[in-house]
Length: 268
Length: 268
Image (cartoon, rainbow over the protein chains, first blue to last red):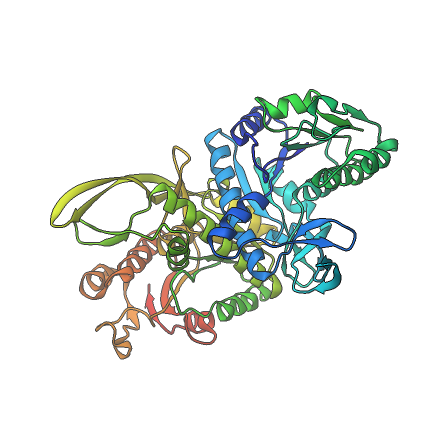
């Protein structure tokens, strides 16, 4: 069982990712593909006259403010456009893909974070009406039912709150949560960098291997921005029984095959 | 087993439809909900600067021209926005809904109609690049797998061609095809009219009952515009083993309960 996270940011070669998935599926490997949606949501939000708003949390993180309108655009783009066009692409390659979001069958369930504590113009304030959250439960039975019937699940990074509200969740953390729940052999996180870099953005400083025991140390010392979430997800997944996490380059030819061969940052 | 078609046009009370579905599901009835997407696709296409284009076929029918860009907007709106917000709404009512499009697991498969024969400015011409089609195969096993596991499928009106291209399909015909494939007891088609009218748009001229043997006659004599497709779908479904088709009002309170009680046009 391999869980792959790919897509969301710019520059990934999704045709190459899908071709590698098709090869794995042909060899009877079970694969779950988790994708993103942030970049395209920004583009379409702009076009629809509701440009994305980014805020800085009191702890210094920059994140998207997902009000209900942004959430509905995110649903449309991530669970609609990106998810179904990936399903179409995989079907063309002979993979019997089924696209789902975390809402479907309560696949990904979690707690809503409805208020953001932010800093704006030097002042701390509470921003209400946020629709994001952290995944706490995975409906493993739904994924297993589909996998056993020969389908390849393609999952959009949305969750459902305990009050049944749609939530925007981080795709990397979603892949880690699914990997944990399925006790996957490997979780492969493809992005537009070759892995964790000792000296970002110098790609020649790739860190090829991190022992799990030292992962937190690497996280604090080297991870910046979105890489922090990838490493956090990796650590959680490994603690929950995933065999190996590889953070690897999604811009190259045969990105998944390369990652499976150990190119990238391997954490285990 | 009841297949319900609702949504797509304006004016339907989807909250009331979903509440009725929740009641049926609570009573252990198996339900499949099929929705539309035309109206919202028109609205969002306009906003995105790709307004819908309607053409007149050589046989006089007016229909949407679905070029690839329109198709991708339709995918986004129908399989994303509408489908997932319906899933959210049903989940809130305690229904464990799973949203699918016809692409997922090749749920609805058919032949692509890539060229439209149209009349424009009095001249006949062929318009290429169309992405629509007619459903010829339903993946019953996928629906049954989900229904048996306790899920309520919510289906967006897209199909996949034999060459694995996404296709825009008519929601009423999709509901009829699914009803036939599942040998449903009833197919309920809710819209913004009370049923087939003898004298459109005078709602007091509702035709309450049509015997299947005379359905084609009623189709030719009374059906206009989209009502033709509803009746065509009904006739196909009844010939394929569906027990009863009801075309009923979706704008009223308890729309599904009323339709099941026989209010509307009952064809059997």
